[in-house]
Length: 336
Image 1 (cartoon, rainbow, N blue to C red):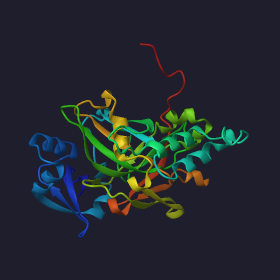
Image 2 (image 1 turned 120 degrees about the horizontal axis):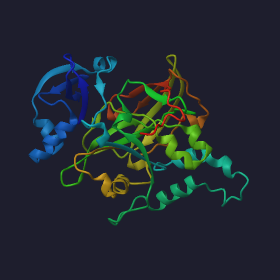
Image 3 (image 1 turned 90 degrees about the horizontal axis):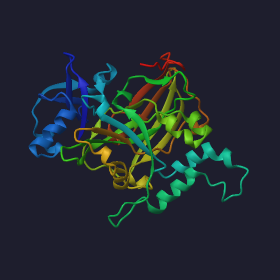
């Protein structure tokens, strides 16, 4: 089951189910957000998919036209963006360590082979050895990072803004888990979506301790919320277009068959913190990548378009790069 949030012809936010066969979207009557729909499911005691299946429809829209008009929203928002936590995990996929290690390897090139093993590669090995526990106990902790709150999330088709002080603004094609915490403090997984985690890889490459700085950037999620069992083997492509021409393209793999951590393990290590289980909050959690244009020597430019295409999960996610300098300078913090 595939859902979107969109703006209808009267500028009203709506929820719709995608019909892949007809390339249309059937609007659910009376539902203005997936957040409200999830709250309704909790109140009724019904599974989200069951509630959607029972919901009446009152209009049909052309899906391609909604995307072309920029009327599709990110699939899960909190009414107060400050109550949406955007986070992620890294070094979770087969091949991710090689990509990260190539970025950091120059720092250790003069050391002996064992000493030259970067912290990234060590953490990846911990995931390979213990990231998929089968005894019901937690496995190895993954790398974890904070991206921001709901204000940092942009919709499909919207520009991804890189701040004026950034050294880079590159794509990271990823799977995103979408969650809402119920009134008992239990995280509820609504489903998954495609995401572009968008990071400053030049800053990160300077020193791995700058990882936290490099992740404090916008991101894009959507267009669709995938509800139901996630395929173990997901295969897609990441593309970069400049003036309409593809200048870089590479396949990427995700899903548990291509990961060294299980999704259960990643979810546990995020939600084990009580502060991440505040009733009513929304969480968008990026599950990691293994494919970067930056690792292939590509430097992005304003106006470039990122495309994350994972066909099994619906329409691709497209966003253009823009650079925005908000004018904030050293000394602008003032005493009250």
